[in-house]
Length: 219
Image 1 (cartoon, rainbow, N blue to C red):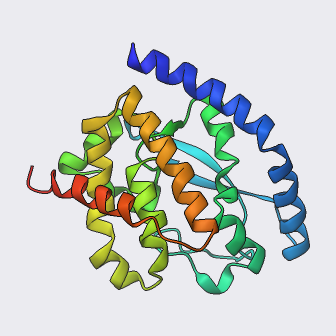
Image 2 (cartoon, rainbow, N blue to C red):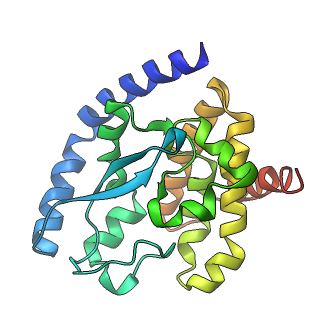
């Protein structure tokens, strides 16, 4: 019943979301075209539910490069154009993933999709439990990365301070997923984005996420 309700909810949210945010889509398209010549959308190859590959859509926020390093968990800051920084902070770059939610390859809330080159980092042992549920636009791991992880640009530091907790929160979602937990994550996402746009950090949500991860560390 939960999976059925979740799918219906996802579809309705995607349709409403696209309609309501259509002005932001127009803003993003114009801003990207003015900022850097190239495609408006970026298609990323990701791993979804059941460890099946799919194409995930995003607004492009980086200058076109002949060879991008997909395996890195940190974006190449030098390639992000100024407008790209804005749409990343406001999460406008993620809006095209509403199309993924519409076609059923993603959900509103769930573990984040994994890049093909990062599969072995996130989908092994108990953490492969994340493959049992649909990947999401947001969720505990995505929020942790948004509040804390995005502040760390050094790859080595990120791997030491962020990666273990982020991976654990993917497993946390599988243990806690349900209608009320999904709604909670949606509310938390709105709050975190509002804080982020205002240049503030949502400390209380960050601490709650850390606590949730620590509860499953030894399990």
